[in-house]
Length: 209
Length: 209
Image (tube, rainbow over all chains, first blue to last red; front, side, top):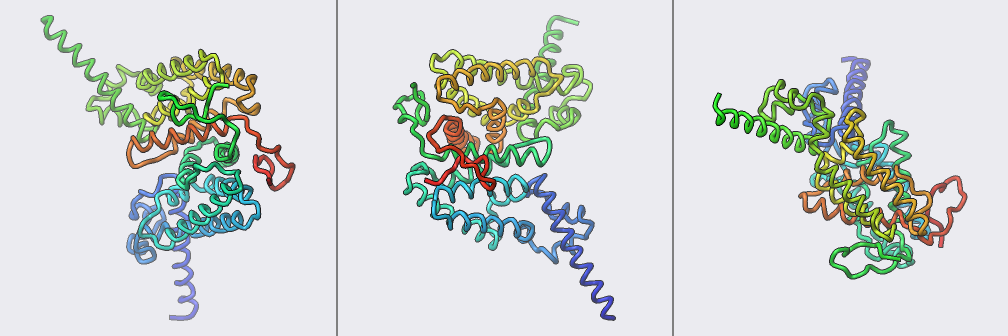
């Protein structure tokens, strides 16, 4: 085998890998993570054997497909955590993370489902949530974030962000920005009157003026 | 033909109709409104001819499938509009409508897509949105609802509510209640400092303390 053909084989292999990842990202974004591996192989135009040689499990494919987004997610929470004003840092994270998720629905699905065996992915997710949890504590201490905020609220609004549909990706991203702003206000401490203890309206933040 | 067999034929027809509607609601809720009519017929165990005889168009099927929900939706906004405190009325509508939508994802899909040819359905939707618009105006005048609230914000949070996933219907409804409370706070007037004019952080409601 000449150097040239080895080169070409390597290049083919890389092309296959890139094409599989590209197809996987597109499929996960539009159809969720449940699409079978065989179907991904079919759409990428490779045999199942080739797919399984590169990505032995669905988890490994998910992890590699969203490696870049997970790194971006980590950078966003790091940036927020580094802000000397924890509430401003918290808000920056919400805004940027909503934007990141609005650009890739597949990542939202992956982030929410938290594949238990995708070690790298789960570590990235845990890092993001732990860092955000610490930032939230500081924002509470600063009196700007609601005391009853829990990290599940972040997952909740990320899922909700994933439900936003629009006629174009640009319109969806714009809608996501508006939604981020609403979520931030929802998390902020406000001078709303205390909840009136009423059976009918328990847990409501509304009260008669 | 005896009276008995006529009765039985009518009863069969009604059974068919009820089964089609039941299947349609289930299919729309889990797979959206794009499922073909033929597939709905197949799952309901009737021939396409029977389906089309009862529901000549997808629109007519959607309208009848969600007739009850649309009536409930109208009753909710009427109740909110009748509250002498417009902000409390507005909040009641958000809470109850999120709950209604959390119980039936198909209705959310139908409400958002606003089928242009489903006259009855579109009228019900327009009535709900117009009534809610008038209530929102009054809640703004009362100083409790943000001046920049637009009716599209309501559609936005309804879509977002539709994105919430949970392990069980009960958990999803509970998550929706939390989300309704966040959305209400997002819509409320708050003492957040005015937006700092900054290129990087335009449209943000956050400001340094």
